[in-house]
Amino acid sequence: MGSRLAQRLIDRGHRITAIAREASKGKLPAGCKVIVADVLNADTWKSHARRDQTIVHLVGTPHPSPSKARQFVEIDLRSLQEAVAAAVFSGVEHFVYVSVAHPAPAMKAYIEVRTQCESIIRASGLRATILRPWYVLGPGHRWPITLIPFYRIAERIPATAEAARRLGLVTIRDMLAALVHSVEHPTNGLEILEVPAIRKCGSSNES
Image 1: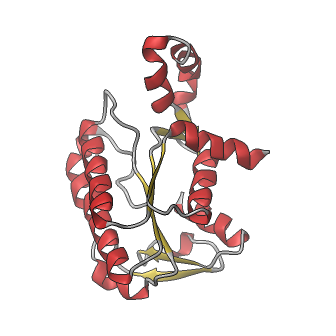
Image 2: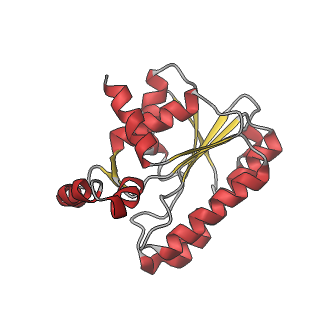
Image 3: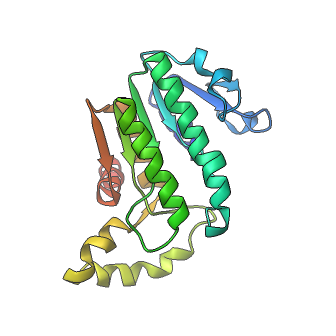
């Protein structure tokens, strides 16, 4: 998602700086300034952050599953703590974070860490936008498409409608549109984009 977002923002005239590992810097698009640093140690990159910037935090354990509870703490939580520390240190204008829809009946450890990350952002006093997708459909992540008919039914039943909408599926296109919207329309306080709002951004982008 990071390289796709970087390209989309570059195409819209934004200047992008990405924090990347040495092995990953080649995946970023042309026109993107790359800083080779450690996302788990803000001291390696916070001097590059400026007040007029937006920090978009997209670091996370790939392919989350219940067996990766330790990685959620060591990577997802730690990277967020470091990014918030860098944002506060530099006084950046806006912070964008991709969390997860909750409450939910699955992925307890993952949700606990992401919820903790949201609390850290709130406590920091930063102007921030938090996106809460549940499952993002995209390359290599398409099997839940088979569940769409069941979602449609659940959305029409009063007892399940709210949960079905909150834990609904979004596409990578929806997410990219919502992230671009978040960058280009910084909130004055704290804004939460749940699944319906993320989908709306995708639909607006298509029109």
